[in-house]
Amino acid sequence: MSELDIDVPASFDPFADANAENSGPGTKDYIHIRVQQRNGRKSLTTVQGLKKEFSYNKILKDLKKEFCCNGTVVQDPELGQVIQLQGDQRKNVSSFLVQAGIVKKENIKIHGF
Image (cartoon, rainbow, N blue to C red; front, side):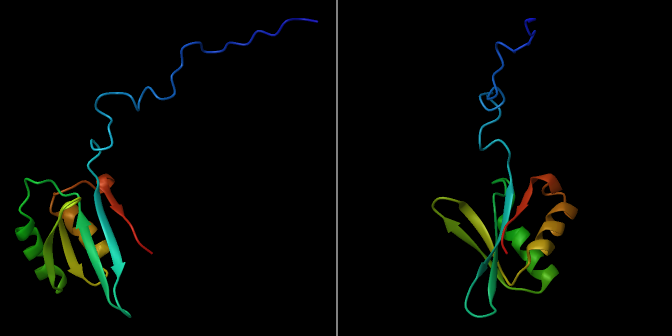
């Protein structure tokens, strides 16, 4: 019988990328676009995770004018400022944010049914 030569990496760390300084959970600044069901057919679209340097009220004004819907900016203790729009506007908001140059397409996460 011959011995098998198996090369086993001795110092491979599968979590090396996770332990790096710049790869914490907050470094990938994702914009989360969600839809929430209200009563009946009514729904609500929320946008959270925008950078604080942007004027939320100006973005909201443009979104309302572009999509002919009402909306507001809500201050949440955990999430910070959240933009709320009437109706299911997930794809519209996503394309608007990319075209306006506010965020890249890779940094947008669309949630909901």
